[in-house]
Image: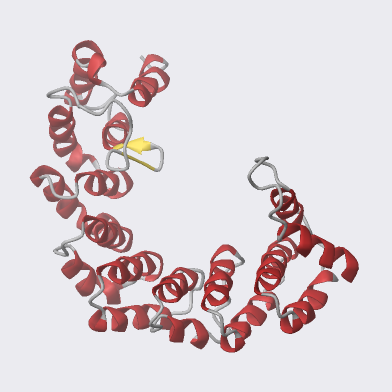
Length: 316
């Protein structure tokens, strides 16, 4: 059994054919490791990682053990990886372990998170940020308090983004004052995360706020997404106004970009999805769809035309 694991580690670390073949020996070994579900391998890998001196081999074994944890639903591997953070000295390995924790099973709230919390204060940016990403995998309420305390001492804009990303997963009502301040942060991605987190916490209670932002042109995609998720018919006119604005002229970019296309939808598609809920009850919604299909079909991006074909042609 240990011979098989040692061989698998060796193949994962094999770089001999990486320039000549997309499906290299290493690539094939990684895919093989992703399928493993033999729980008996786990204690053998514990011993291997604790005694192996070669960093790359420890890294490969860490990848294997993370896959085994997921495939056997064994959270105790998480405890082992957290403990390894306290003994591992190499910065690349610490980052790799935290990446494994991010990709693995959710971290049970009863486990000791102090190694991850400590690493959010590391001088090494990769260690700090991978620790913040790993902390998104736990529901321990102490993480939110820790993230808020970090924001008070953090001036690095990239760290602020990763902390905002953590709050997007863990934030509660306690985070709202800080999140509202982040709406004024210079970085657009931080503002967008703060807005999305506020919406997911407040839901329908802040529907008027989402509409105001949409009409004022502030975080337009995030505002449209929040309306789509949480608003009622009172938002119909705001959405019609935004759609009319979007299609008032041809958009210069013929392809989707990160600004216009997120999670499979443009803001126009989100707006149309929202309006379609009221299509049979509101005449202004019917008129808007008629205007889109009859006057602005050529202004639509390909994915938006497909949305029209699937959702309007079938129901017309």
